[in-house]
Image (cartoon, rainbow, N blue to C red):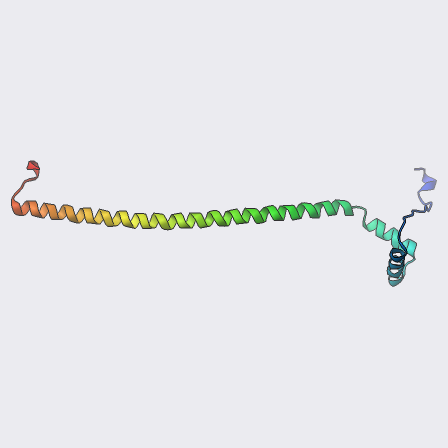
Length: 122
């Protein structure tokens, strides 16, 4: 673009319905702008809008993925808690069995002493 063309004003057109044009004009009037000024400002503001729309879609997709991962984490956490409870119950059972075995060993030793058995004759 030549230097003389930098400040030259060009017309940019778009085909719209009558109701769209009325809406646009009403918005421009509300802001005390001409329709042309309002359209130019709107175009300037929306230069990167399509990129932002893609980012919004990407963010929504990431949020959905995070929600799915949160579900998996909650499920795994529940499974871990259930396994911990199961292990605690098993541990208590083993400790109870160990105690019973120790008590039975003590009882056997007492009986052996009462009957006069020595350990070497077992």
